Length: 359
Image (cartoon, rainbow, N blue to C red; front, side):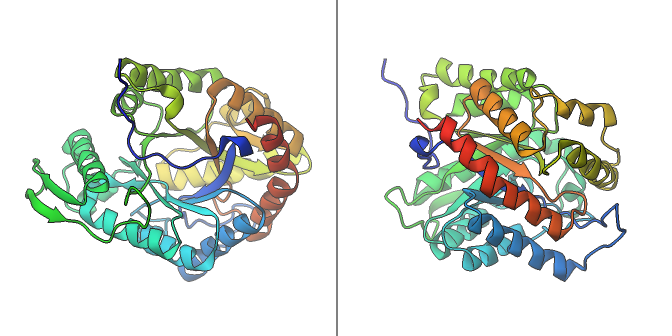
């Protein structure tokens, strides 16, 4: 049987081991330990600084998500990624996620392709649905169309990405007739890697695998074996459609906080996670679930360098993912503590993980 080719994939060199990066949702929250809250201007500048620090420490990728509600500064996330493209030289950049359901795919591609040109080919798109749904009313969409909006606009984004001239029609926007969407990335495909964001839904993982697109799986916690079930759904769906699962790409993402002492890490980080979730998701984070992160089989990557290394190696063995992206700044973490995590990642965690995952 002739296997179909997957869609445009990110270029990941597996001989160098697991790619490791960080992401931010651009939340704008007071530090629960000190009560200090940055101005929106300072928080935006801080995000650019975090990307620069990540690059200096040898991380592979920096991602920025989009949110349109109170307690965030990431409404114009692609503009901010453009600033980061100018402020860095080699780290890969990605949205994480672009809410394609409430965006115009033509405009998203134009903006992301422009960032790709500014950054000399470092840009990727992670397209998602939104876990915070206030933006549907804000931007003039009906929440009842949550699923159909995403599927249609994701389809159109892929069509634009892989065809310079587009002919397309759908339900939620006027048709495109011989539309030439420019600029194009300066690579052989004239296209960008586009990931489908999955939040644990087996049905969404199934659709990602059936389409042959890379899957970006963001989780809040739990046991690695539970996460593996969703990843297995993705790979099995891809294989059922004739794709070679080994040709596809998987990224996992979740909470990350590293300290020299594990007890200190868990004590420091929990108030950030709990208070941040109360403000942005209307519900705190379970202390019991968070404390389960002390188990080496948990996907909450909090602890001392040795524990975080052990967790990431276990996850890689379970998932065989290509990239891990950690959220290190959520809930008002101070820049000093963000720097400490990045330093420990660069000096201790990343070298060890790459050594044992290189192929």
